[in-house]
Length: 172
Image (cartoon, rainbow, N blue to C red; front, top):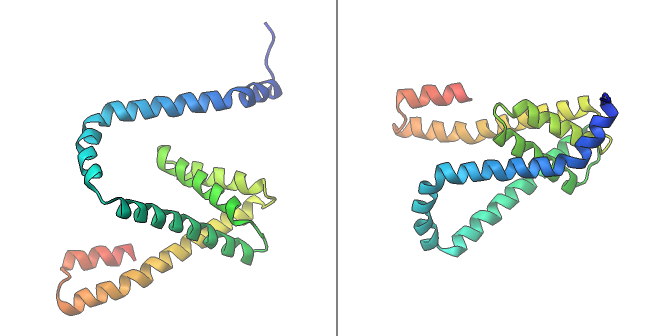
């Protein structure tokens, strides 16, 4: 029996990877529908009664958030000398966030996928990692700028309990 070398395995994988991923995706979707069918059926009447304008508004807001996240990466990587197109960054971000959401403990896997996607656009791995770090820091700063005045107001008006203040302080 012939022994398969690394190059042969890579060729085989490239040929069949779409089928494998499609089968896995359909299999997991089927498992989700099987396990969550009752919940989905009970939620269907609620969704049918919803105002379509609000559903479209929610979808539009979500798309706007995705564009803003891509723009944030464009600015961060622009500061680092890597001029990337917004669609490239959005695609890489969506792939990263999908892996992060689906794969158990998927943060490192998603980050690796992000690094590989940007390597295709000639961004070195250290630049991508540092840019991701800067983007995470900007997320934390934005959260603190949002949370601090709200907590200040709640403390001032007496609406904040001690456990809430402690929890907010640990998150900041």
